[in-house]
Image (cartoon, rainbow, N blue to C red; front, top):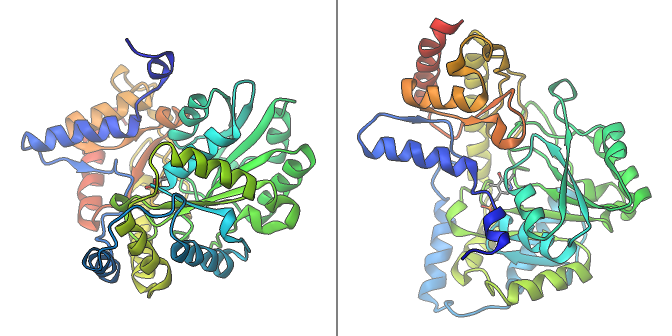
Length: 393
Ligand SMILES: *Cc1c(COP(=O)(O)O)cnc(C)c1O
């Protein structure tokens, strides 16, 4: 019955482990989840108020497909202020989440015969979205020693005449690392020279630590800006995952095509959520800073705790809300923990702790833990992991 496309697609593996954890919770088990990929904070009050006002004002009809001008202008101002980027309205599209922006980009830019370079470990949706567009994902391994940043050598080696684009995600889900300026400059030079588009997913921009500065690769010069599509949104920065507002900024011709695709699928993102996003971007930003400060404290606690578990080795992450410890030292100890999936399953069943196996992100040597959870649960979860793995150490 199903199309080849539907048969080929893999459901999100991060959602799979999360649903098993939820099922155990529903059965009454006290599951501690390090699996989730969304802030545990509530959406800021001023943002909620803006949405309520939009409803009361009757702002509840179709809007322009690619977003209302008011929101586009707020995005333009944000990109200029935070990233030093200048865009016009026809270079901006608002979609139903950054994931939807990425989907539109892939559909508008890629087709059969195109190759897309994806540094691994990668976010789970990139390869699937590339494949859905008929193009071919090409994985290039990055290493912990290099801070999980794509090196210019590895990038250049992966380029073929078919290479159409490179996907960058900084700060990264799952690694928790951000690219530094020198690394981005080298990548940008190669992309410009070889005519390769850069899809830059900057959704974790606001979550950087230890003085790390987020840099948008598009800001490194007019030549690279012309080849770059910047993707961002309010989900992670403003604890607004359920509102489904994301956006992309890039060449007008591409944005126009993305808008046409969107016009035949979802039409506009929710009118009310657009008004909420205007407030999120233009209103007071103290809640963003407060959330980032809390994540920072948890980051340190989780990172220190992970390194105290025998067999775990974790480099200090400097972005997003993930720790990505290397766990492969344990895999030889017992068949029960001989891979990241087996380890994750054991932790869920025996410790009642949910983590995401690294193989979901293309690297079996690691597991991902999200610290979008309370300090208390971080402590309890670490203790349970330690106890459960004690016999294997
Ligand atoms: C959460 C996430 C997104 C998607 O965010 P939405 O705006 O909620 O669709 C995009 N990229 C990465 C890497 C993410 O972790």
